[in-house]
Length: 551
Image (cartoon, rainbow, N blue to C red; front, side, top):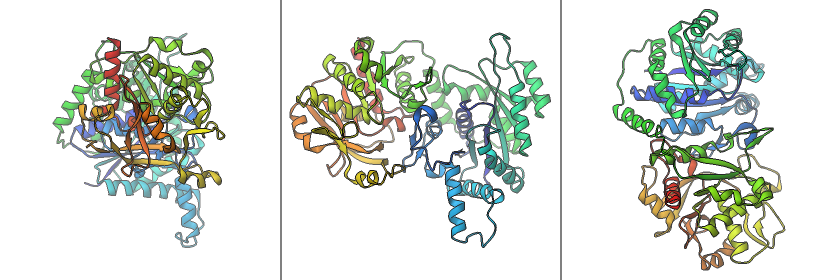
């Protein structure tokens, strides 16, 4: 079967849930026995998401093959339960760079190179390459941003051109917002009408409209949208706020979302992946528990956006933790804590938690709050999980307060520290010397050899899944600084051991405290490979330890 393309575009505001809608559709089609693949098309001129501010853009996700991407790729992997690659992400920057390189190499044979047709052609060339290499029945393309953004015009033009060249094999799903003004008390459909109008102005007619709102869509609003947006009533799919994003596929399925999409392609055959349906149902059933789990505090510094607190900077950490709660039959019970506030006000606030996570971060802001959190967990016997930067902060804390190296630090925070227990990786020095920041850090999956008998080894052995085979595992990385082996012997003699290293022993990949109930720090990012159908062993072991602490 020739590949079919499904475009998911959004209107009015960003953050509507296009990624969850696209991921849910992919899962539903997979459950029907079809193979899908997905791609996020971001309108930014950045070549990747690595240099973007996480507070503004959200968390950066890293693929197995080492590309820094938009967080939606993480959603795709979690719903599809498989690894994606560099082919599954493109930015306007990548597209423009390719067009310019092609022009310089005379690949356009002397033509005048223009926005239209050459840029949309390059976009569709990438989509067709993904379809060919993935051998998918359906390629689901999420267009970032919103309809009406000037930077999105060329991506929308690519839809128009692809549809002309692939009659009957392109479907457009428009995700649109209905606000619920408190002073009016009813959903307003005008934003949907306006975003569809903007979409029509580009020459693209939506085939299906997915409505996003706080409350379910009623019959009156649905009829109004159908009339003014030129779609059939049955092609309007309601998608209100739900307790969990993992409930979205089931909610959409009840309305026949996947059936309506297949009907647009005139496809009636269904093979059904029964085992996948069963496994997903078992997982979603586990998300409905009302039993409160152990209390976890997450100490980060990328929460504040003006007067608002956001979770987008740590989406993967949050989802990995939530999956662990669901695995044990609990409803999630966690709270975000500002590292800067702990730095200023002390750690008394940590007393209420049964476990502490210190996730990734960059730079010096909030560092002392993270170090204080590690000290609190170590001294109080509270389970601790340090992720990348969180491992580095735990190393600094132990060196300062156990080895009595009072000025121990990371050279990222204090380049002049007399005791750089965390320092710049040797191969990174040449990049920083010329300010070459983008795409140069240690990225993607790297092997780590786990030391037998450690808490880290016990975690992977007790909660096995198909992604890991001890003693050597592969986990994804995103860092520029590392554990300084010059201090390794002194730290280990004091009970702060390296529980995993690179196979050649040169890089410390994980640390833990021997005489602590659970104090583990990893240089890698286990949250990137945590999925609903295969929750990560390390998060499971951490939450189990927190449960024991709660008792």
